[in-house]
Image (cartoon, rainbow, N blue to C red):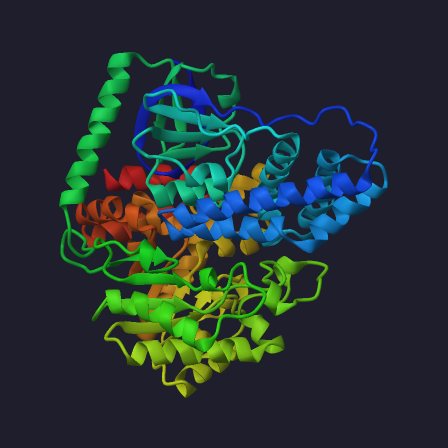
Length: 546
């Protein structure tokens, strides 16, 4: 049977009939503008309707990762620059739908030129354009198909608002023609526990109702499978999920070596009983969709909710990860020629030191009132001096365990120096890949460079792990690569001490670790390091792991 190849981004197997996501409404031929005021009113009505619908979906989202993405879209929709640009287009003679499309085209070009995080949001802008145009035309946006039976969803790409409403019992798997390993589709699929592949060449040509089998780990899609084979795939997947769900407990290799399995969360709603703690508490959710920074009291309440839910367990709090490339209105960041390489993460404290100071004070207050083991780390650290200054600030607020994220190759190369002043490292492999390979995370044609199995990335991880072992300090991974059961073996063999991921990914990683000894993991890591390509690394690991 024909087999298509994509990039596996959410492990698991599923089979079922293909259903394609319907295209959005098309723009009609422009009509002459008779009343500019009426057209501008249509613009505002569309913006209000779309923002309200996205906010409703955000409030209803079961996962905070999903809610965070949707609220970022609300910020885009309600940006005054958007309505101002649409008004200007109306004054130039465009009716409301075309004016909104033109305004968003300007935003799209600016985001593409900026690169980095803003370029990653281009698909969100495209979805926003489609929703605004549909609202102007009085037409519904095509949603996820509802055939009354489970299926494999196929699309060019998926917008956050589409992915947010997916039911894993109905949408058995996702396959997209575009996207990359760190796209929203990939991240949200892992969050929801749905097998997924992106950048799958030829998937757009597979007809609706064709039976396919998807392997979300390898990214392969077998086209035209029999009903019996499809049923067997789904039965085996269900049995595997049941077995993994029953295997509770801490992460351990077969010979008892501990590897902490932690969760990536945005608030207390994301917590599950399966994680040993939290390896990445993203605090951005508290700051989204607001003109002013949250007060210290608001922050104390939000942090306390998570700390109180995890008595005696580790919670690693990442300080605000925002800036010119992840704009928040209250920061009032100036435009930059290349925001991805500009003032973001810890660097924001250079311009707005009070934001970090207030956040550290709130974390310290919440930590003192609870028994969770609170660690704090800063994003976008590049030098040992930055790391030392952050550690000093944490300790001045009574936070004894301070670390940094390794997302910049310069920091990875100087990990030994950085560890002289901080207590731990946490590798954000998504950004580390982007900066190591000079490859935008949303440049689909460069997706292979963002593969965590790239030998250069593995070498940087190995250098950080070795520095941690030498210093006797923990080094963890909180990037999406930690959720890959095979790659988890490589990380463990390199000396990584904790793996943090979407909570739904923990059972598969726990099972993979339990099937191998530490020595076997070390041999697997050596095989991956010796490979020259990601494909060779994967193959070497599969041979070494049996």
